[in-house]
Image (cartoon, rainbow over all chains, first blue to last red):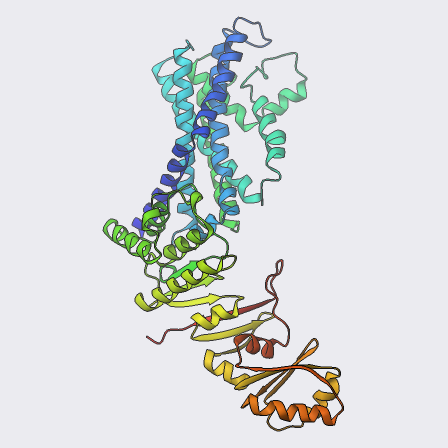
Length: 257
Length: 255
């Protein structure tokens, strides 16, 4: 029986891979969009003096863009469960003699693989563009942060997909939840170190899980502009990841096809 | 337990971005078939539903009938003992329907699979099923073989219309040779033996009552008559959910 569960995980993973490799527009889209942010913003604002920023802006924004690429791609995979719901494929998977846990694990691994692939492409491009890399150990830690971020975002996407019935609310969720979280994570501009911002906004930004991931990525990759020590961030991010995955699994197993 | 059951849903449940073969392969993997079995079985079921040439095309490019056939093939992939088909020919053209009927017959014969199917179409049930159950308002009203069900209505069915049905019914109910009597709208259906001989008798009765018969016909009973006699209402083909009335037919194999 264990073999069948592994097979099920593999099937779900393979399916994600095949679907992704076949939709060219998705491949191009998810790489071009973060690249735009990185190049236009990174070079456009290079040398600009932003409140709360030390050093070069491109060093600041590169980890933020890597986080963005992973975040949006992973969430998309999580939410794509909704498509399966609407097109009926989920029923077929749910009646199969495999546990729901395997379905989730397979899907999560699939989604995380794709988003990590994108994250790495952005990371490599930004290193080519001259982004400072603090150390080999830092780079290694960066990868760990990327993995954790990928899993957290897939988990979050799964929660949304399980709670939503169709795509009606999808745009609202992007605008009302994802974008505020993203901007308040100081991925694009410094938040916590910027004294011009109202205090409640800075306080609120500490409640943003994404902030710890971006801050951790930044601290480990460039070693600049970080608020908390990367290792402290690592612990926090790990806990957030575990909670999100747990909740995602819980909500998915409660949901109906 | 789940390995013994195959299901084909009413709504299509295929992955459109995969090819037909991949859909079958993923299904087989989830049901624990090993590599060699998967390959031979995929070819077998594809042959059964005539999709061998289309196996490497994306399901997106399949027609509705082809999708349906692929789903039936997928339901059979893991050698289920029982296969459930939920309205297998809903919304398909007459030609495709015929073809799917043939596939269903074939898999029942060749694979020895017991098949349960639900349908709204009487001719489908008549053609495919050995045993039929009629469900109305969520209750099973009757389960029997097609033959017995038809016989229960009477050997022949006479349909007639005339100016005052009520008077005729009251009079005709007293006749001992009437097996079954039902009124639908402006027409009356009678279940009788030897229908041809009863027509003159009925006309005589009507004339003695001073009633004018507008039309009268005699025919062999169909499942429609069976259905109507059990539910007492006209069949509703499709309703927006929930479907209160539904006919379920079952086919049980005596193997």
